[in-house]
Image (cartoon, rainbow over all chains, first blue to last red; front, side, top):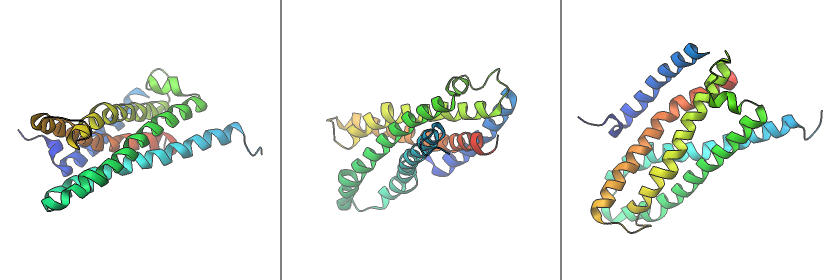
Length: 30
Length: 169
């Protein structure tokens, strides 16, 4: 399987996915 | 209002933190958005201009930008009095600001580690600053490239966490 980090587009997309995860985590903790 | 007050020093370190952060993340994005995608398009005889001259200078400001960012960031968090709250992600504090800045700090710390312990040591082999066999160079290039892409990915939530802690929560 190709590593998604080999593609710049996938890297940026995953960054935005992590923002959603981050927002959920902040609200869960705080 | 005092000209050089505690508040001024706190703001001064925030300003230095932002300047260093731009130096760091600006170069990170230059590597990932400009240099790496352009390398295959550059004729072989012109590639040394990048590998021998531009990349080493860019890597210098990149890694020292990272160092200045983490140092000024830790001083800033101490001056603001939330260093410990942020390290424990604001757990038990019921304060979203501490949780947000905490995630930002941890993401930034992981990125700083990647710069100094994965990207830079491996790039030294790739660029011939330290001697390495062809196989080792290839492996080093792969590790450095993936660590750099990881940091590009992490920079997006890191900046969300840092700026939301100051401007949203």
